[in-house]
Structure formats: C-alpha cells, structure tokens
Image (tube, rainbow over all chains, first blue to last red; front, side, top):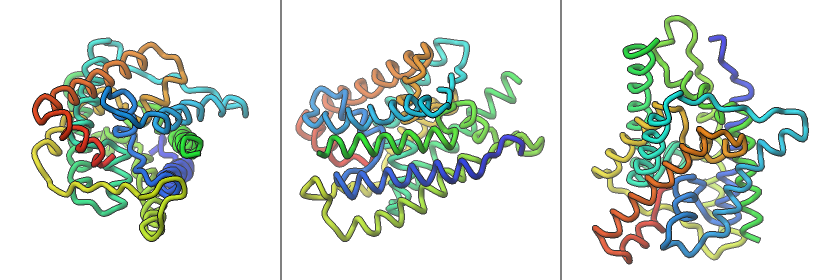
Length: 141
Length: 155
C-alpha cells in the first residue's frame, strides 16, 4: 500500500468534519456541496450569498496553501472531453436526484445515522467501484 | 455574518480536501480501484478521511442538536426519510460519473483554483446536469413543491 497516507487523511478528514460541525453550529446548515451548489445556480433560489462565500472559501483554500509553499495540484483528467462532460452531467444530475453527494450523504448524512444517506453512500460507492474496475481492468490497463 | 461564517467553513472544508489529497481525482480513483488490493497498489486513504470526518461530525452534531445556531433562528436538519427510487437511481448515476473521472462536487469546485480546462468542462457539465434535473423536477411537480423540496435537501 505504497500510496496510503493515513496521517494526512486523518487530519484532512478531521478538518472536513470540523467544517460540517461549524456550519451547523453557526448557520444551522448541512455542509453538503450538492445542495450548496444547486442553491447557488438554481434560478428559483433566493438564498445565494452564504452559498457563494462557502464555495469561494473552498477555492481559496488551495490558493492560500501556495502562500506557505504548497503547489496547487494539477488534477489528472481523462484525455477524452466527452468522458469528462458525460461524467460531469452524471454527477450533476445524479447528486441532485438523490439529494446529496459524498459530503451531504457520505459524511453529514451518515453522521446523523440517516438510513437514506447510508443507502445512498453504499450505492454510489458501489457504482463507482464497478466503473473503475471496468475502465481500468476490463477496457484498458 | 453568516456569509463570513460560511466562507470560513468552505475554507476549512477546502483545506481538509487539500491536506487529505482528496482534491486529486487520481487519489480518489486509487481508493475506488479495489482490484488493486492483491497487487498492493490500493490506496485506502479515502476510508480514513471518511472515518475521521464521521467521528468529528457525529460528535459535533450531537452538540449542535441541543442548541440553536449562532447566526440563524433554527437548525435546518434534513427531513426526508423515505428510501425511494430517485435516491437509488440518483446515487447510481452519481457513482458512475464519480468512477469515470474521480471527481465529486466538492473537489470539482475546489479544483477550479487550478484553472485546468478539464475541470472547467467538468464543472460546466455538472452545473448543466444540476439545472437539467431541477427544470425537469419543477415541470413534474410545479415550482412551489420544487422550492420546498430544495429546502429539505439532504446535502
């Protein structure tokens, strides 16, 4: 397990948890990126400012890291634009249909012991594992 | 004040994704690739991230349930409990997209900081998928019900 980084994973996970707790203690909201993002771009939304600043904070984090010597990682993306666009559409539509993603269901929902979120997390994890197995081990290597 | 509070929360969340490496789609895919377990190349980091986040969130939410938030009159806990077809179908579609690229919404938005063209395409497509769902849903149930459903979102 040469790629395993348990210490940074535990610290990072703790910070994600801290963020979720702070958003509830301060603003009474679930730190679910699906809901935050949808409420920002949806035309029927009337509650945009805190959502915009949350996402601004998200983007500012790696930018601030450059001030103390980190580099912003350049994400490795698939070569095919079609794959990227299809994946983006599926993520946008799917998270909205199921009302949450890795943060809203996977963290905030499971932390509330919500059966909906436990089921949703099991389903999206399983689907993603199957897709990676097929794309990495069946189609390509 | 609540906008500054959520700026801080987004910032802490972003640092969490950054430090844990979950901002990098290739690291997420390294976790999802369970067929790499026998060769020793599997990366269990995402499980540690989730476990740590769940411990902190679980403990913090237990506290938050007993108080009112600082900048709002009420906590908006999700109200849906039904395990229905949209939940399963939506999670399935999301999982397929997640497995194709290794990006879920949080890291996708945070990666806009890299100014990578691939990320821009992904985020525009994700926004299109989100809006497509909401238009479809509003047409099906009417704008008022759609607005209520949005307020009751799980996350």
